[in-house]
Image (cartoon, rainbow, N blue to C red; front, side):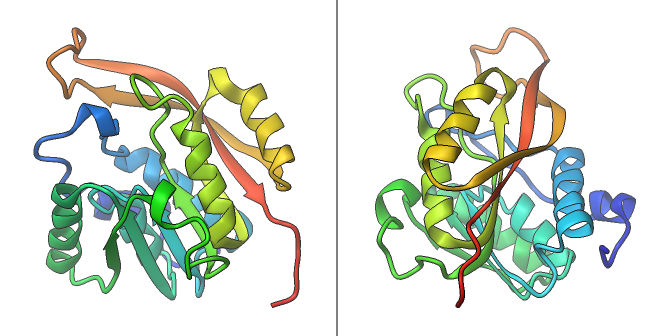
Length: 215
């Protein structure tokens, strides 16, 4: 059960400021409030993986999933972000909304593996780079880090065209993959090379269940 209704959650998330100057090499696209709210609401209402949980948000950007996790009752939320400009917007959003969440400036694929954060979080949420341009395979690197950090489950978005590969890779990493929902991800034109005002991408919303262990 979620502590606030889906519609109210989306209204809150619509007030979050996005990237001022998005960086193409980091594939910076703001997670749409509608998708973020649906993701997080499903995580809590169906699996109870947010309320009273310690949550990590990898590649947190301006804080969409971090703030949403807090609003759904997370005990503590930590965002990890490589870009100082995005981290600054994250802090501004959290401060303006009076939300006590943390943002750590970090290259998650280099700094976190084998770090002190191993198994420090109940739940990991993320909307990783899909791996276009010069970032091929980056989404799976994020997944590996998420699995290292999480005790219970990792939730992530991946392009539907990579579905078979994601499933196979997840099984090899020792987690149980499940598609929670299939989404149409709307990306608004944010860069000069974009010729259309917006593009819809077929995206899978995954839950990766970690093996049960005693802590």
